[in-house]
Every structure is written in structure tokens, then in C-alpha cells.
Image 1 (tube, rainbow, N blue to C red):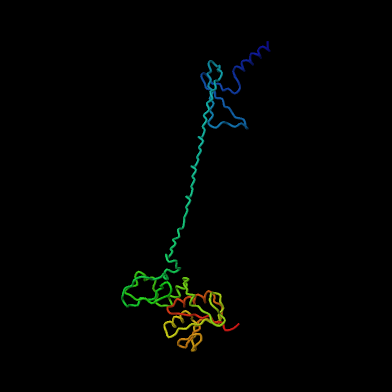
Image 2 (image 1 turned 120 degrees about the vertical axis):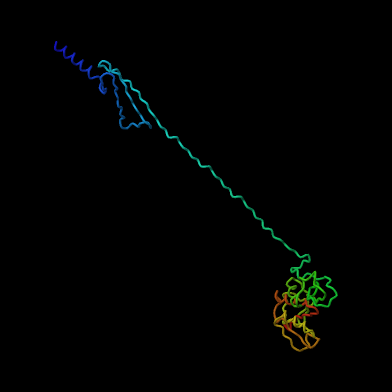
Length: 263
């Protein structure tokens, strides 16, 4: 009988206490169940809310109804891709254009192209100009159309035109052991010339041959008894040859005598 009473009491106690983890309220109540997450579990991103609602009638509590709402907030993935910018420098090709001016006479210096204009009947001295063979004195009313071809002196004209490859080698002669033709590279013990009685020609020689020396004597000149040596003993190199060519362009000049006295 005692055992039966103990069993009744135990059943009553169980009925009064309910399930573990459940909070009972009189009449109509709300039971809230808290769910914990054990370590090592990664909760989903967002807010997790669990609400358990139960109704108790006459001291009894109905089975709880659990409603779990999960609000997940996902940040929108933002992908920013900068526009690819490709800059190509334009290829620049510069072609240099060289203007070539060629004198129609073929002369290196246009000033030494033959001056063949009609300068009028006036007696005014215009200057010296190259006529294709020598530098001659010109007179007239105007130098047009050849004003750029005139020089102030015979020597200036001769030096410029010799530099433009004009020369009269037929005025070169030899004496003693030197025999014509006299060419560049020939050895001379001296180069002689005879200015005669023309002081302007002698002055032009002195301009072309700075070391010009003159002295009385017949050889190799037969006129006026004076001979002049323009070049000393040596080989006719480019510089010496240019001077001889310049002298050959003077009006009424020559001969220019390369002399070799002995072996």
C-alpha cells in the first residue's frame, strides 16, 4: 500500500514539474526556449531569433511550438573593375628633306659661273668677273643680272674661282731640268713669274703668293729685267697648286715657270 502511494506521489510530482527546460506559467503563458550554440560551430551570418510559444490550460502546458526565424543579411558583392585604358603613342615619322641647289653651269661656286650679261655702254667700272677663262675687269651701267658674280679685285676673283676648280695649266712651264707638263706633285726648286711693267699684276701676284720676292735679272724673264719667285723649293702640293691655278686666272698673267737647277 505504501509502495502504491509513493508511485502516485512521484507521478504527481512529474506532472507538476513538466519537461526539463520548460517554464510553466499559470493560465495562458509564454514559454521561451533559449538555444545556445556550442563552440566550434560557426553561426550563419545574420540575426537568429527563436521564439517558443505554448498554452497552458488548467495547470497543463501544451507542447511548445517553436518558430525560428533567421534573418540573413548578405552584403552585396561589389566588384569594381577599372576600365582598361590602352594608350598608344602615334608613330611619328619625320623625313628630312634636303634641298639641293645645283648651279646649272656645274661650277662649285655660283660666283664663278661665267658672267656674260650686257651691262650697258657706260664707262663706270663694275668690278672683276670670271668669263670662263680669266677674271676680267668689267665696265657698264649696271652689273645686273650678274651682280652676284662680281668681285672687287682680280686677286679675289682668281682665288675664289681657283677654289671652284678653275685653272689654266697651259700657262705652266718648266726650265732647267723640269720639263712640261707641270702637274700637281711635281718638284720645283722654285716657281718664277714675270709681272713685266704691270704694277697691278704684280700686286695681284703678291696677294696670291705672300712670300713673293722680285729682283732684277733676265732669267727667266725677258721683259723689264725683273723676275719674281712666288714659291720656294718643294713639291707642288694641293696648297701650292691652288695658288698657281689662282695666278693663272689673272688677266695677262704667266707664264709660271717651275725651275729645277740640278739633280
